Image (cartoon, rainbow, N blue to C red; front, side, top):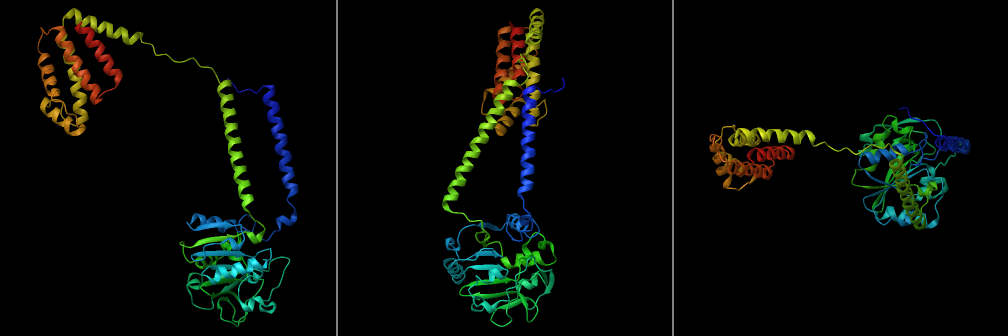
Length: 406
């Protein structure tokens, strides 16, 4: 029967389609051209200048990376921690600059990209206004290839990188120039206190578009210095700031969302159970099995063939038991008992005796029905204990043999 919608279902689907179209159009209108041209290398952005690809790559490679949306003053673990500040769009307050300086001095490691990040670094040359050629562009400059200037673990991993430099580090000073030209380095590394500072002229190597350029990925990974370091990717200076109150509200919203989802699933499940097709409960007919047992029992009873009933049950029992034990069907009862004892820890000294009695009773044409019934019951009991064939087979065998012996 083809699936058909009633009038109520059609109204619901029509209303849902109208709402979906309205939300799609509204989302398209609310995305302004300025947001499409956003050049902030944030891990939440998927455009060319964003850094979500690098963020997800670190997570997939097994790095302990997390977004840091709190003030630098909230960082409590300095050693074995790398802080990435990529072209921040918000200038830090005095307390925040002091926290960054303390983080590096006490053993932290920082990767700062862009001239705005350079202004946060605790270096005398950078703190002065004339220390950095801070040129601001409406759009990033064109990409350029830069070769390594000095041998190091970083330049060994990436002999060449691609950047769109917004500024250049002064050639004088104690910083080790890694890439660029002799008078205009675009990537440097220097030590401050117990920590390390790595500065890039731009965040190009970790952007979605720049990550695939030759040498950029290797350069970015080499700057992290191993997976044992904890990586904090700063989003605080990109405007994604989180407070304790926001954290609590997020948890409350998540709990409310989970409860709503469970309620919705319950409603859907209840409705589907109530409105689903009705099927009668299946009852297995016992007419045919019972007729077979009755007929077989009458035949044994009229022929006075109690030994035949014992023989059938015995052969069935020994065949299945020896097959489970990996033995030949004509194995002596003593060997069968020993094998069952070793494999299943089945300790019953009467098993071999019962098998011997059944084997002997098969040849007795004058076997009394009461004795035959006892032997069949003993085999049925052992079959149930060792679970050598299904319950249905055991029940059928038991009923037929009892009827035969009666």
